[in-house]
Image (cartoon, rainbow, N blue to C red; front, side):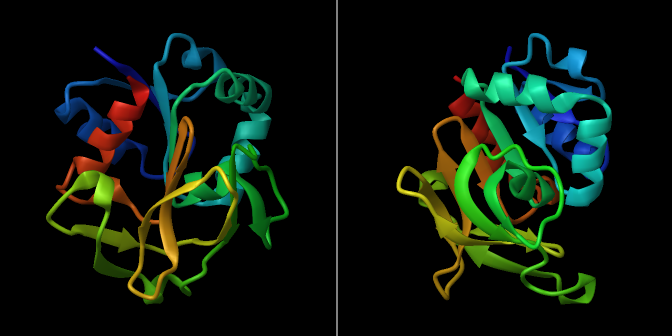
Length: 190
């Protein structure tokens, strides 16, 4: 059984844990760096990226997470998690793990009232289309050479990507009943 940690400092960690458990993984809440010991993968959930970043620094996650990611730990970052994993963040005056070669913009689609849902094609998930939920979502403004774009909006703007052991999404897969995105991540953990 895969043991997946879900960073539980702030944000939608409970929903990620529920989906991962439904898929047969042992999903645990990670609130302290020592709880990363023995995990096969990690989810950094959506929430408020500045708050999560500050708490990561306060609790001392920076060194241990950067080491684990460098050693190949698979990590899924959704919404705020994507911001924290990006190498370059437009308008961020805070902490970043700089783990995936993407440039992101915080709150790219507007304020809370501008949140939306839309169907996106995610070829690695197959058919049918995936219902993506965007809440004060970031956007991917640029990708490095080694990054695979997993999904884009109809206007071509990338909203999910992968580079090696890092998978990111601008949307919230934990807020749908469709578990295919989490299943895909569990496949990366193998």
